[in-house]
Length: 394
Ligand SMILES: *Cc1c(COP(=O)(O)O)cnc(C)c1O
Image (cartoon, rainbow, N blue to C red; front, top):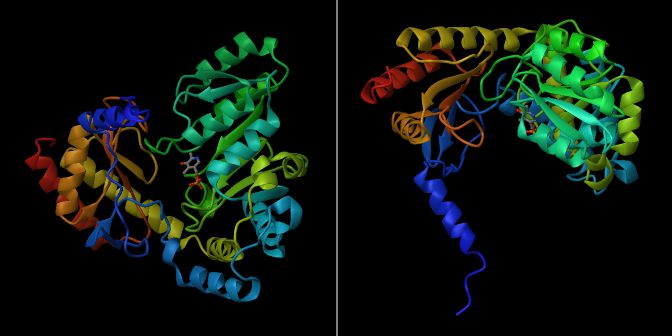
């Protein structure tokens, strides 16, 4: 009898289950809003990246519907052959103006944006300085580039400068890349000091602002705006899939850099363009953000309120200074049981464990949203208090 060549899968799956790391993928049966239908049950949504409630906003939906009538459903080409619609060009112009840069590029996702940028800027003879906790899509982009990857300690500009100074002489070009807001902890990179360290050694700088876009800065203009670093950070990449409520990635920077990426970015050359409906919905999101800061202000009010109340209850919310609120629990099986009990209490908040976060730092990650009312948040806090007491966490 020959051995099953896929037997390793059985072993790996059993190991995941034993470690409490098997992901329970839930099925969503309604739009992302304050309340959602999840696996057939109506629950409070503390789990999506719908920071501003735009994922189900009537203005965005209307724009998407109109675009389907005007443009059909698919562009049927990659951007560099026949897929660049006037809508894409308009969105890129509007996003550049919103963020205060020369130009921008709209790609299929934030994940794609990192794959588009990093291998275009650095290669085999170059070096990348990367924060220890950078997002997986940054890490994959770095690996694809074949540049040497040197890690500096998390959010530590002094360590970044040490690693730069010790190594830069051996390479042709250098790139420093960091998350803006770290998606699992909700802390913010000290981008001003990282910029200074990089500038002293003439290192190219890039920030992944996936969780800062629509959240940080004036009216959600992002981390570069937050730190007043306009014109200093060479590449800002972000996503339109989180606070913007739609889908797609954005790469923003100088005309020189963006024009170069139009020639070199592989997701632009080898994968079809984003649909007209999504692009039109993103344009409507820019309209909403430029019109008023109301949603961004409400998001921050809710975030401050929720975090303060959780701390009063005795929960450890880690290093967060943003609407991302980790509830630190330690071991993954405990976090999974906690999440299941919250779900029974009518609250949807997922447990996050290794490899998304380090071993022993499992947590429930709560995402605050402008879509939540104070009554909704109070409901969530009561559920956390009940489950936390029952499980001996508080
Ligand atoms: C979510 C996220 C991405 C990926 O964005 P998508 O548009 O969902 O592909 C990239 N970087 C960071 C830091 C993220 O949190």
